[in-house]
Image 1 (cartoon, rainbow, N blue to C red):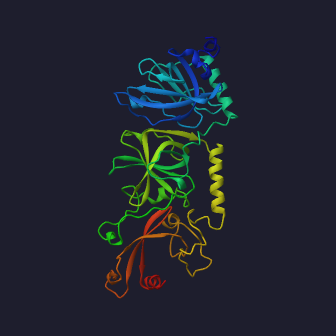
Image 2 (image 1 turned 45 degrees about the vertical axis):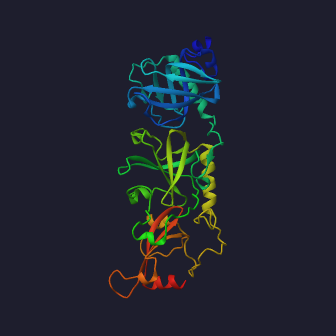
Image 3 (image 1 turned 180 degrees about the vertical axis):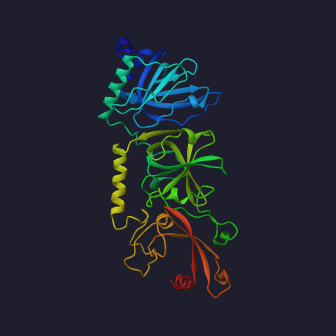
Length: 404
C-alpha cells in the first residue's frame, strides 16, 4: 500500500481494487450528486460520482449516509473537491464503490479553483484536521483541473426538450432559471431551459368544456411574478419539473439555480395539454461551468437559431406552411408569447405564431358584450412553446377575426 503513503494517506482511484473491504482516504473532483433525501431506513443519503487525475472512467460512486440531512455534503460549484476519510471500498460484480458511514467516516468540501484557500467550505461535524500532505494533494488536483475537460456524461439517454415524449426516462442538459415551492401541491418545482421547443400536444376535451372547466395557463398552482419571468429567455420552452415527495428539503439543498446542469434520469408527463417534467428519487445532477464545451455548444446552437429570420418561430413550424394564418401587417416584429407577457408595454403591434387552444364562448350566438353595448367580445386561449395566455377580441378586431 505504498500509494497510500506516497499521497499522504490518500489512495488514488485507479488503485482502489487493491483496497476492497478496507477503509481508505480519498480525494476527488465531484462531477455528479443526488439531492439529499431520506433513505428507506432512518438515515439520510446522497450519492456522489468523483474522479481524480488517475482515473476519469469509470467514475467512482460514493454512497454517503448520515443521521441528519444537514450533515450531508452540499456541492456548490463545478469541479469542487471532496476529501473523504475512512470510507469503505466495496465491489459489486466488476464495479467498485465507496461507502461513507455516519459513525466512522468524515468529509470536507473545497473550492476547486486553483489558488483558492485550503479551508473547507463544509465539513463533517466530527473533528476534521487536514495534514500538509493532504494540502499538497489538494493543490495538485486543483492544478490538474485547470486544463482538463471533464466528461458531460454518456449520450445514450440524452435528449433535448424538442425530442421528449411521455413515459420515457432520459437525461437533460439545461439551465435552471428558477426553483420554488408549490404550496398547493406540496412539491418543489424547477424551471429549466435548453434553447429548444417542446413538441406540440393534442388538447383534451371539447370547445364547450372551456366555460365550466377552463384550460389552466401554467403547471404551477400560482403564476410566477413578473420579475422572475423576466429572467427567463423569451425564446425556447421553460419546462416545469416537479420533484417527488422524497425531496422534502429540495430547495434548501439544491445549489444549481442559475447554472447549467445535466439532470439524469428524469421523465415527462402531459397535464392539461402541457408538458410537465418529473424528478425521480434516483435522479442526479451534474454541474457545468459556463465555459464547459457542452454549454458552449448549446448556446452556439441557440444563437444560430435566433440570428435567423425565423428565430422567434416555434421549431416545429414551417414558415411556408399553408396552415399558417396570414396577417396583412408588414414590417412588424416577430416575437413570442413570453416576450409579449413580460417585456412589451403599451400599444405595440407585433407578430406571434400561436395555436388557439380554446375559445369562449364557442358558439357565435353566445358572443356578447361585457358592458351591454353593441360590441362583441370573445376570449381566446393562445399557446406557443414559451407560454399560454388569454386574449380578448373586441369590436372591430372580433369582426376582422370572423371575416378572416
